[in-house]
Length: 450
Image (cartoon, rainbow, N blue to C red; front, side, top):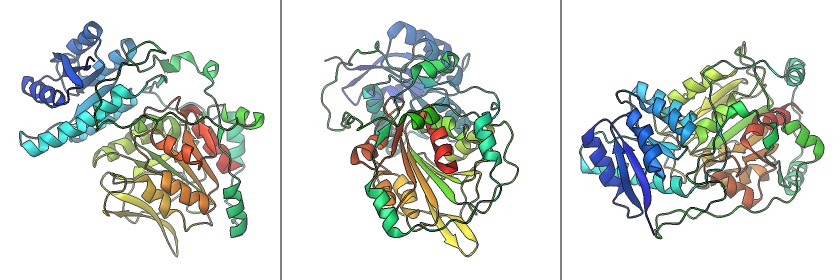
């Protein structure tokens, strides 16, 4: 069987050689062509029809961001960005992920064999996932504009919120009974509701319905397991509420609130930056809860992610800091290289960052965040799992359900870039609502305000 065809793009002939040599170490892949700038890359994609592209950020004539946008528009295929670790590079990498790049790797920092081998293993892992992932979902187009006005119905509901009322603890027996009665629901993708100008062609290399010819078996390829069928659909009234995408105010919340009754925790990985943009930028300025986010990402990149999300969101978005006070109306992104946990003192809730060993191969880990919420039953907790490889977050969600969590949400297969983390939680039976990406924010708002 023919190997998958990869286009390597970099303005350095030396780096093109290094990347090409790393890729062909796996017989599943062959280098179909190379290109020295973005213009050549766009032309090569059209001519050679590769299954995947590695794309440098900084190039002459046309940079990686410009090339990526043209590729996504004309020949959408999985693109893995090659990024340095400078502030400019990390900022541009986050932008590329939101513009449709599948994922990114750090460029080799030197010719030292250990560094190159590590980069090679990382690149091959992402390429294997990229070519095996069916990309039937539309890509969300990220526009360089401010947010729209708040939906009148949601805004009127939010305006009624003045001071959070004192929360009365539910008896443990009631919480346990609620957890046992959970039933999974799913909202189908409502294609006719989506504005066409917000869509771009689906990210796949073959026509819809065409099955990719599998490459030779490899022990390092992760198994792709089909998702179980949902047990039932949402009731009509819930469907109507969740199907209305939420728009937001272009102004930031005036002052974060120290007192809150609800808390939202979100976990995601591959495809997460674009998914987070859709969800976080759709939460209204008066949102009465803090949002804690774990995105699998290396150090330095999470700061750029927080800064970019902050520029699009009505809420304040920050990279979390040790000992930082947790406030309603603020989104806290776990910094790369640190686990993030919720802790409490006499004055309220705080952020705790630790360098404990990796969990599920990650630091930060979604399971660590979710598990840290278990003791705080006085809070109405809401857990969300979105696109990503692996199963990080599923065990933590189970423990939260057992502790009486208020609601659980997972992104549906239709819109996931990689349907791994959500699938693990859904198939284990810990998820209340299985929703396409564009409906997750409105479901979160509904759950917090009901």
